Image (tube, rainbow, N blue to C red; front, top):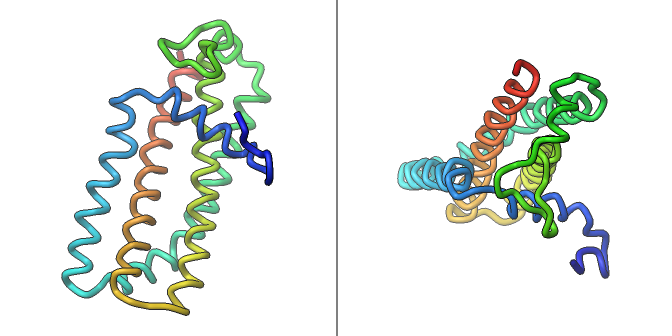
Length: 177
């Protein structure tokens, strides 16, 4: 993989690995559903003329929410890495069904860790996107741009929440198996 030939790009590897291991029903749950919800919400706000107002409200609350979620994701990764729990140790010997990275089937421990790392990267990306859109919308404003930013922020927010629900569910089954 040529990631990082000209600029640091190794942070993209977990994203590529995540999408190479995700299954079709998980794509529907984590990507298609957020797109549908964001599309419906954005169209409603655009038709009513409230796209900018909704975007500003999201901008006011999302950085704090994302900071909390980033802290949660980092804590979850730390628990997985530092835990000596026998259930977590057992996961290292259990393979996943059809989840392959670089031609090798990964174990459940690697998969759960990858899911939390992916979530953390997406949370950070959304936070950066919010800062960018907040700056950009002050310079250039038109309703379609506000609607686009609103659409993207809602997609990523719902995507993050659905991935976190799946991550928490897997962590629950690992720790209380």
